[in-house]
Amino acid sequence: MSYKSDFLNILTERGLLHQCSDLTALDQKLASGTQSAYIGFDATAKSLHVGNLTGIMMLRWFQETGHKPITLMGGGTSKIGDPSFKDEQRKLLDDDTINTNIRHIQDTCFKQFLAYGTGTSDALMVNNNDWLDGLRYLDFLRDYGRYFTVNRMLSFDSVKQRLERESPLTLLEFNYMVMQGYDFLELYRRYGTILQMGGSDQWGNIINGVDLAHKSDQAQIFALTAPLLTTPDGKKMGKTESGAVWLNAQMLSAYDYYQYWRNVDDVMVGTLLRRFTMLPISEITRLESLSGSDINHAKKILAREATKLCHGEAAAIEAENTAQQVFEQGGIGGDLPRVEISSTLLSSGVPFVDLIVQAGLAPSKGEARRLIQGGGAKYNDNTITDINALTRAEDVSSEGYIKLSAGKKRHVLIIPT
Image (cartoon, rainbow, N blue to C red; front, side, top):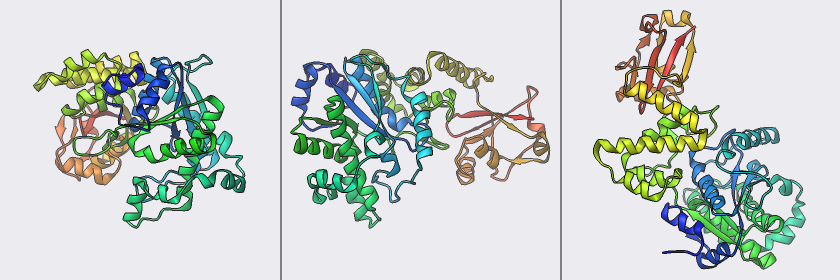
């Protein structure tokens, strides 16, 4: 199907269009001139992660097609936490932690993807704490509570699944949906924002805002979601043996970020090239048609292009060169992560299980043991076979390091000090 608006055409060909509240009316609106759209990001850590990247790329394409993207930081909603599909509610954060997280996210996770400024299509960053923190609860309930029905809110998948599992769902979490709906109304009133986007698991929360604005202000605004991205075994993309794939280079190096994309499942390459690179569709079609060992060429391009978007071209080239030196030439690249360890400890022997965790190659000792038992951990290119094995000073190479890897070709250098 072809649309009047370039934005919807691009979303369609890149597999980013899942559901829309009124596709025909939105298409007409986008084709009529510059519009603004937003996605909300809660500040629960000092970085966003690959799970947030679909939304960021949607905003980037929105800007590329001449519209104004808004990144809404959840300074207010982060104090509550959304009713996710998990059984536990989010850990509550204090104001100082939330504000610190927002500063880090602003500096490291958006500016490489979006152009901020004061122009018509320049991106805008907004914090919903600006209006949520000053709400008078009774006034808010009187003015807006009547527009939300518990019946409708109980129908959302995130709520239904929690209730079906008889997992506690607090009033605090229930209010998140109301707050998110009110965010959309505020952005419509302040900036004329007509579109909220997000993942398909956010559909219910987004529709709340559409309904609220229609009932309170008779506004025509829209909801649009992208399909959730999952691995071939049905898991959400963005997790590794060692944890989340962060966008902040201080929390995950450009080299490790590159390696994440380099080692994705072969069947995911075409989907990921469409979603997370700016390559032309014709080139992506050519790359995803490759088979056998040739698919590695496509995966290298995916890794380079995705890393270039997030960390810049120089970091992408360095990560690619390091990977080539380590895996194709048997050498050591300058971008390889390094972990220092006391020579005194090393002389008496350090368990590989401990080193794997310390090096960030696994999140826990239990996971490190599983990697060893599965034959997925190596030192100096030798497979570790004993979960109780120790590394000692004699394992240090003549170049002054121990090369350690675990999982999908992830290496670090252990440097004695």
